[in-house]
Amino acid sequence: MFGNISWPQLLIILVIVLAIFGTKRLRTLGSDLGSAVKGFRGAMNEAEQAKDQLNDDSQEDADFENTPVEEPRKDD
Image (cartoon, rainbow, N blue to C red; front, top):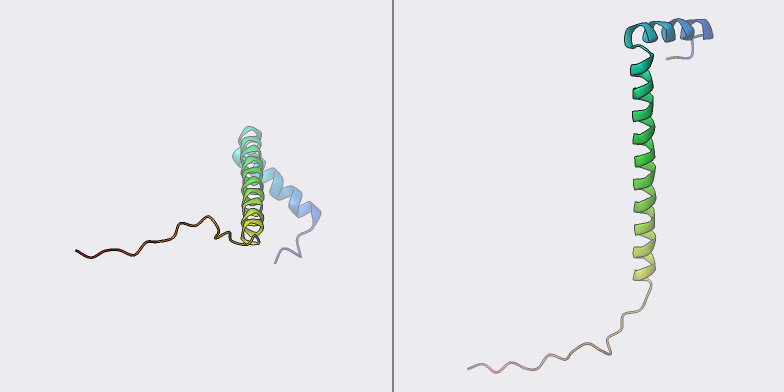
């Protein structure tokens, strides 16, 4: 779709975008986009660590030695 766009055409598009939005607005847009990507990567790393921790915890055998024994109930 965009394979036919050359460098001069991209430069013209950039000039038009700068004229419409201005440099200050584009700068804030870029920083907002950067912080969003940074937050997304952080959330992905947290999810990966949580998944690894769950996998590590599930690998351990269950310990039933300290489990209380249920006593039979007396029906009145």
